[in-house]
Image (cartoon, rainbow, N blue to C red):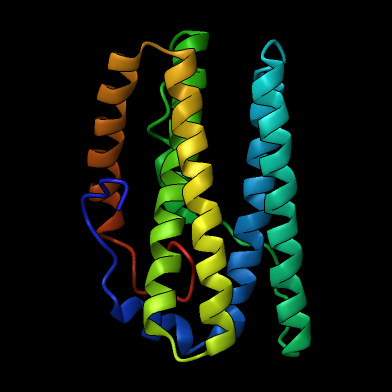
Length: 192
């Protein structure tokens, strides 16, 4: 999926299912951060009104996902925990180039695409491996949404940058992500 170099071990779903309250809290905060990321991209691209319009829709959708996860937490009477840092995302952020404005924008879009790709892949693992029917259906719906976001971010990068350079850089992102994801998949977090 998305040419990810290292798939998630399906046993991660067992870890997640072992503490659904924790995974839901982590997921809610991931959606909140995705909302914030879409808004930060809007701030970088005011001269592209069509892209801004699509980013607004993504931000609204991510905020809606945050709300949906929060409602599941409340309905199931779990405790909505505090925001926590996402070590996986923080490690990915180190790979963003600080070159020209164009290079930075393209890399920020590829960074967003990578997070969406891995999240989508994790949601697929949950959909295929957990017993909770309500959450299976929920994560299947979100998996489709994350795939659309991934496609949108990659498309924006290719629209704003040189396609050959963007494709080469995406391959570099895939290689980098494969190295860091090896340390993850053993915690009750979406990326952990």
